Amino acid sequence: MPSVAEANTQFAASLYCALASETKGNLIMSPLPFSIALSLLLNGTDATTQDEIMQLTGLAGMGLDEINQQNLQLQRVLAKINGAKESFVLANSLWASLPLSFAPAFLEKGRQYYGTEMIAATRSELPARISKWSREKTHGRIDMALRETDFALLSATYFKGQWMNQFEESKTKPEEFRPEAAPAHPVPMMSQSGSYPYLEGDTFQAVALLLSGTTMYFLLPRKRLLQRNSIYAMEQTVLREGRIFSQFFQPKEGLVKLPKFTIRYDGEFLPLLERLGIRRLFDSFDALKPAVSNPEGAKATQVLQNSFIAVDEKGAEAASTLGMGFMAAAAPGWKPPKPFEFIADRPFCFWIRENGTGTILFMGRVADPTQS
Image 1 (cartoon, rainbow, N blue to C red):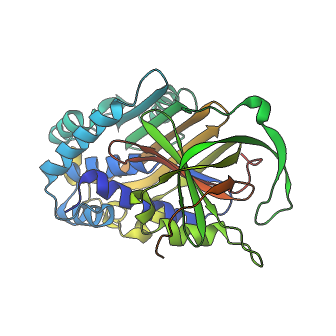
Image 2 (cartoon, rainbow, N blue to C red):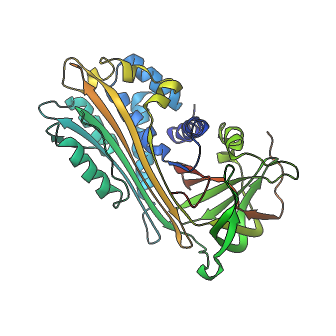
Image 3 (tube, helix red, strand yellow):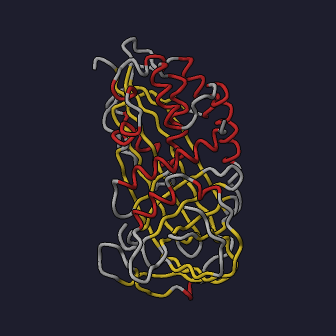
């Protein structure tokens, strides 16, 4: 049986690939808040909803107490990312519009295992209060705009880290970038040479750049003599099964060129989660009856995540806020690596992973670094 951390990695791959299959252009998301929020909700959902969540997140067969305990330990490990060269925030909160409230037992599980703070306000005040909370937790990067709601669950992440070997700004030069559906155009391309963790296969190259307690990975379709490999096809083959996250990246000498980029993505994830198998949470007011004091129960009516990332010569900064609104009822095989040139002059993918547990903090795609 996989651990919560292992299940989270597989869920991250599944969630990202499902989103990537229907989203063109630049993309950035944080899978961790989905794992944390859904694990927390297991403590306040009925049996059918619990089963749907566990099946999708890979937690089926695990006891709820074990899931809570492992999530607590995971969050303690992630909290240690903070240091001189890195900072990381994972913050969770539950919101109720007065006079409604969450059930005491659910609130206690949230506080004990997920560090969840509880905030109550009038229904009309909640959106502004949620927006303020999101900006504070993400250092001003994310302004979460939930529609008016009776209850809400928020999970915010913020990361900032410096490369162990920073790029020299003097080596950043304009070079052509070739999007898949647009003409080539110049972008600021960073460049450095050295020894890097590296992996390649028939259809891709991948390189890892070290931060401090984390690593940022870059995945690039291989160039072909007579054809261009699509970033979208590569995502669905290389990332979907999640095997690449457990592959060994061997240190190799090489050249790395990456464009500077800043991208944002604001997504509505409720339809996606429904298609992946979580339905009762959004269809039945009975789904959240154990979590709320309202005798008629509640169901989720919105699942939004806003995300941001910036990469430059010094390092990477990323942030996201996941907001879930609840309405009360009334209503192929790998090849040995070889010396390489990793030149990201065409669309590529990336992910940031915590080194100890392998937890994926952020994932995304750069289709065009000039488009934010």
